Structures are given as structure tokens and as C-alpha cells.
Length: 381
Image 1: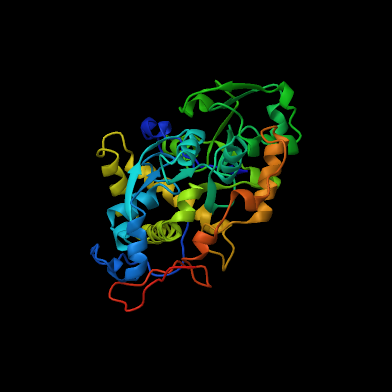
Image 2: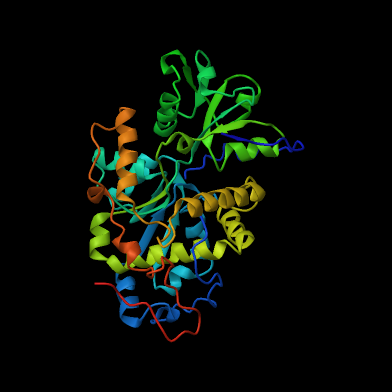
């Protein structure tokens, strides 16, 4: 468990309405390329033949997980658009803000209304496929559950939650359920209620525990000066993920270089935003219609928090976004335990990180030649 220290009160309730769905430092240069040229050669990042292949893909619609908040797979896409990285690889990308309903996002992707989209986790990709959506997971950014359970500091053992009220956003996330069961909590005695996105229901005593996201509600409460304790599934051996990128399989098979270079641009943007965070978040604020209602400080904290989680959960030598079959199987078993899946799917039937592998080097770093370089990334077979 992690206890947040009390800080001076700040009025920041607007940020509580942001439901984070679901990044980290990728090695390599963090310098953004020169202004995009949009030339047939892709500004030196890719060669002319690959550029032509990407242009043949037409408009690539990307559906974000939730609006344009600064969370995994969203901020990178906004930054890649703003900084010209998509143009650098000859992609015509249209960003569409998601509603936060990842099942709907998967359905729209399967139907071809979007060619790629971001969903909350690998678990949600598995659930979507099990529900009949024809999508493929092409990158998994975070290999740790993003979900957290918050309580007042007076709770020092999870079994103290027996007979209390737990607040959630619609259902108890599978990783948190597995954590509570592992900790010996009598779930039958816990009253589960649906609450909104205002985390102060916990500190006001309306619920004794509250589900949330590590990169959202705890930050909001800390900014308001409220002290809470976070209980994290990974501390109880529960596997999970966040920041899942999915694609329409037919599109990916017909235009593999377009998918590869979309992932390439996201990875490069992720890398650049490590050192140019203010510029990246400002682009998200502008994409959201200006600063009104967009908490810049909170969103910078969102990206910083998720980046660390991504970095800490990505093994040395592996690229950010890599697929871990063993972890995916374990994550599927969590869903079976919660009754959301009948059986664990073969990871190879749902996930394919070959598109990612095609644009990273042997050290796991994204291949992005610097401006003016004579080298270029060629198409993969």
C-alpha cells in the first residue's frame, strides 16, 4: 500500500471528472524533428517507396480512449499530430475523441469506422474479442494494473473492509476483485455501489473504499490536501495492464506499413514528451478546445505518473508496447476468476506485436532517424 502525504488544500474538483483509462521513457533521442515536410520521402524518416505505401492507406482514423486527456496512447497521438510526426511518415491521421466506453471503441474499430483505437487494457481487448469484436492488439504500453483501491489511512488491513461500502464507477475492476479475494476480504459482506467521478465521496465518509486509477483520483485528492491510502493489485501478485492499442485486422493486413509507422510515431512522441511535457499537454489542451475545463497541471501529472508505470513495468531491452504472452495469460485468468471470461484465450489469437517489432531496434528503442540523416526506415516484409 502507498499512503499519500497531506498537502495544502487546492480547489481542483474539475479534474475529478477525468476518468483515466489508461506511459514511460523510451530510449533514444528526445529531439523533435524539424518542421514536417510532407514530401514524398517522408522527411527522411522513411523512404519513398514506404511513403507511397502509407499514402495508399488513405485517411487513418484513430479513436482515443477518452477525449484528449494526457493518458497513455492519447497524449502521444495528439503530440504526434501537433509535432508533425504522422506527416513525417506520410500518414494522413484523423483523431477522434473517444467517449470512455472501450467496448464501443472496439466495436467501431472492428466495423472499420476507425482503423486504430486505444482501449483501457489488454483485458478489455480480450473481452472485446470474446464478445465478437474483430480487433487485434498491436501494443500494450503498461504491464501493471492501472486500477487502485483507495481508503482512509485508518484502514491498515483490507479485511477491515468487511461489512463496509465500496464505491465504483460501474463495476468492481477484475484486478481489484482479485486483490480483495487474495487479501481475505469477505466480498459478500461488502456493499458495492456505483458512484460518480467525484473522489471526495471517500473522504466525506459516504463510502469506506473507492476504486480509481493511479494516475487520476489519488492525484486529485492529494491536490485538495486529502490523505488517503492506495491499495494496489500488483502488491498482491495480481497481473494487469493499461494503455492498449488495437487495430482493425483487415486494415492492418492490407496496410501493414501504415500500422507500423503509426506505432512508430506514437513511440517517438512518447519519447519526446518526456522532455517536452508542457508542449505536449498544451497541444492536448488546444485539441480539447482551449484551456477552459482542461486542467493542465493535473494532466501533466497524469502523463508523468503513467510514464513511470510504463517504464517500471517494461523490462530492459524490451520495447515500450511489447506483448508479454505469459502476463496476458495471467491477466486472462484474472478475468476468468471474476466471471467475465469463460476461458483464457490464446494470446496469439488476440495480440500481435509484429507491427511494433518492425519499427524498433534490437535495443528496444524506436527507429526514428534524426532530421537531416541519410538513413531511412524501410518497409518490413
